[in-house]
Amino acid sequence: MSDTKPTSRSPLLAGPGAKALIVAVLVLAFLIPLSLVQGIVEARRSTREQAELSIIDPAGGRPSLFGPFLVIPYELRKNKELIEGELLILPDNLSLVSTLKAEERKRGIFSATVLDAEVAIAGTLTASAADAAPYGARLRWDLARLVFELPDLRSLAETPKLTWAGRQLALHPDARGGRAYDKAISTKAPIAPGEIVAFTASLKLRGGRSLSFLEPAGSVVASISGSWPEPSFFGYSAPTERSVSEKAFTARWYLPESSQGLPRVFDGSGVERGKLTEAAFGVELLGGVDAYDMAWRATRYGILFIIVPFAVLFLFELLSRSRVHPVQYLLIGLANCLFYLLLLSLSEIIGFAWAYAIAAAVCALLSGAYARTALRARKALFMFPALGLLYAYLYVVLSSEDYALLLGSLGLLALLAAAMAATRKIDWYGSRNKEASL
Image 1 (tube, one colour):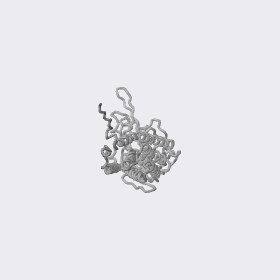
Image 2 (cartoon, rainbow, N blue to C red):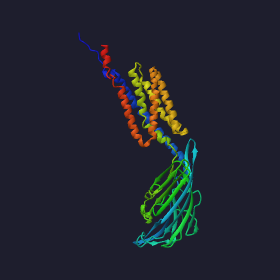
Image 3 (tube, rainbow, N blue to C red):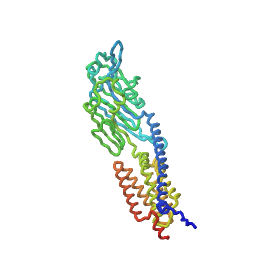
Image 4 (cartoon, rainbow, N blue to C red):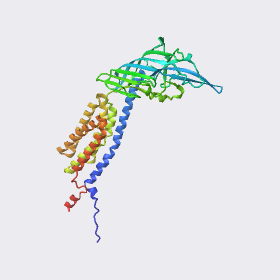
């Protein structure tokens, strides 16, 4: 008679370790729906950007101005070949004073910032180009023209006014295009070699989101003031002075000639278009908290909102006689995944802060109520304050961008320490229960 020993299950698979492995697999599986949520956030962001463009583009896009500057054509004969080019002469000094008015315009649930700006320009320009001209070139001073460049001529709200050496000159579209931007307006500017000319101009620009100027040479003093509470100053140089209140702002730039990136006179064919635009500076009109950026950042912490409720359920399961089915874990996880969709959809209508508060309260209450039913114990309602604190913690992290990494690291450390403390006496192999049954 042969002795047969019953096949024994591994203690790891028989004890609480088995459930821990199942929970860990479920946590990893939730990376898939979280990635899908991130995709939805990106898609809605793209839809918002298209809606903004549909409002801003017809108004002239993002207005920017390069100029005025003088263009002198030249001819050069080399090996019986006629070479044509143009010299650009930038002002010796330039003053730009701009006042803008901004407002929000809506298209459906989306909105965009549009602006109207009045720009007053004054300066002087010296017609000295001999040193920059190629050797042997013939300068065509009789064809000199004064040029302004813009990304889009639709940003001109009305015909610009120009006074050149005391004379009123009319500006017209320039079919030659531009060197910094795609479009240009110009006028024939009478000038003689060595002459110093004073000029003034006034323009009314329109568009959306931002206003910038491109003045890469000479001594430049510029100021922008407007009725907008959240300006962001950008570009080649930061403002030397700025003042921002709840309803308006004022900023002033001073760029001495010694800090500029280009000489005052240069050959237009030797400068790349992208190189010129690097010297632009201006103001961007922010629209408050960007709900899509905040929602996308929140999804990066999404795995925490799966781990924490799962950990709470698992600890209650270990410390009580109740048992939670993996399907119940799954439903709790899905409830917390839906937090991000609820947050995103509400933030498009009522703003991020209120949307976050409502979505967090709904999902924490739903998870707490379901945990109470699953565990059949009132202690399971601890899920509600636990998730409430977690959502509040995440909001603090999202609102403090500069310290987000530090706060996130400290939060993870605190959660790990709490998990270690709560599970320090757990018999993961289930060996004690096995020995008690023998």
